[in-house]
Image 1 (tube, helix red, strand yellow):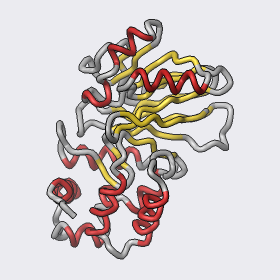
Image 2 (cartoon, rainbow, N blue to C red):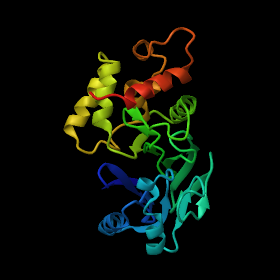
Image 3 (tube, rainbow, N blue to C red):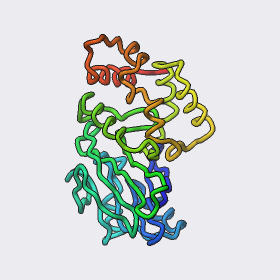
Image 4 (cartoon, rainbow, N blue to C red):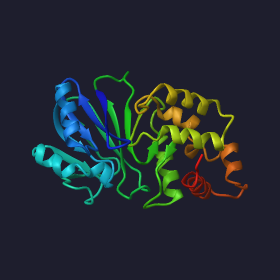
Length: 258
């Protein structure tokens, strides 16, 4: 199993997920079909599916062109708002790519109500860490906006992703890491793990695929609502529910201009 990021638009990521024994591949959020097709040809793989994390145009906007280019490919997604959808998936659904790549669906409604994260593992190699395509739910060091949901839903979504093995590699939907680091430092300036992420950002233009769920638990303020730093920054009291802390933190990030 192999994952290749394909940068599209200004800061989006599409991906090519490859089942190496069969050489079959799935395109994740193939907004720019020309770029994705060129990458697949360079890799020498056969695209047999598209995987859509949510219906927003910058993720699903290439689906109709993809369907025309690959008429026999299955297009997976979480609602009928996904263009050219051919296979509707829901929480805990499982499907296979090629011979060995297992894909499990995790429903994470909030950014959109049809947001699906996809946990990938290699059935033939238990030593290989799995990965997760998080779309606009979880970013490296951050979270997506709550366009169709609430702080409670995002808290539940991130906790759900937190149940994956700590070694799970994060493949997110945008290159937002530098901005997320800046905000995180304003909330938790003494956190050594945030400093570690800052070094990673300075050394890598592309940060997706370089970090794990375990890392997120250490440096992502949206996954650390009970920490003293986050509670202090959001003026939480002993009675403040996590959902309210999440809402406050998201409002702070939305208005952050650092």
